[in-house]
Image (cartoon, rainbow, N blue to C red):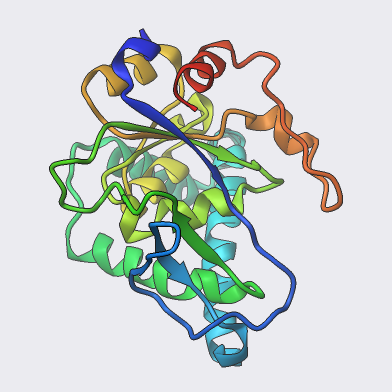
Length: 251
């Protein structure tokens, strides 16, 4: 079903290199005629100020803290109810209700996305996002085909995935998270504010693809996260049979 509903698939490798001098700081789009590539993000660490780096740290921390809060929220809710911390329990219930309400992104969400996109990349020594073939999902083009983005590496906290998630060039792409993580109210609210999230469960994936949506997924998942190494590039696809079929047919 996945194979029949997907026009093409891309492998995306996010590279965060050591401190080097990269050409002028560019936050917009730039085309490379040599290889017909499209650069949508390129940072220059030499022009990044300490204040910008601090804001970048806040952006990175927002991902990590929300992820950790998502893991702890069920236990915290139970303890809050048992111990009588009603304010904490009410807050968690409030977040849960807001996270599951059918609202659409507005001015607040747009400001949040702009903040992440502006400062998050500046935390690192250098970041670039390049689309081979010169076709970005958000580009208004009649030639754009439905695309499946297989993102690697996962990493300990999947920071490369986070950089893609809030980048304007990926606006409208359905980023699929682990079902348990996506069900968490804190993470669900956060991810809905930042872009267009979804569940990585098989029924949900089939529904997104058959509806003609662009979909992004880190196929290695948690297993690949546990294999993370700064010295060796490691991939985990042992139990990713449906995704592997897509790779074999379209890459």
